[in-house]
Image: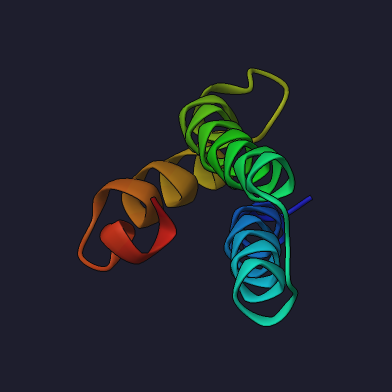
Amino acid sequence: MDAEEFLDIISECDVLREDIEEIRERVALTASEGNKLAKAAEHVEKAKSVLAGLFPTIRSLGEDVRQDLAEELAGPGAEALS
């Protein structure tokens, strides 16, 4: 796998979180339902954070892929990924 595939996975977390937020805005929910969706969005953010920390350290990846991931996840624009 190359770095781009891992970055795509992290980007999908943003898409999922945005979809959850859209549901919360567009659908009439009970307080309990809204709270559960808010928790789901929080869990997606936590998963994204774990993945962003894990991916650059996977030992079986080539050094170049790990380095690319580390740079992409720590460099300018990383805020958009984290």
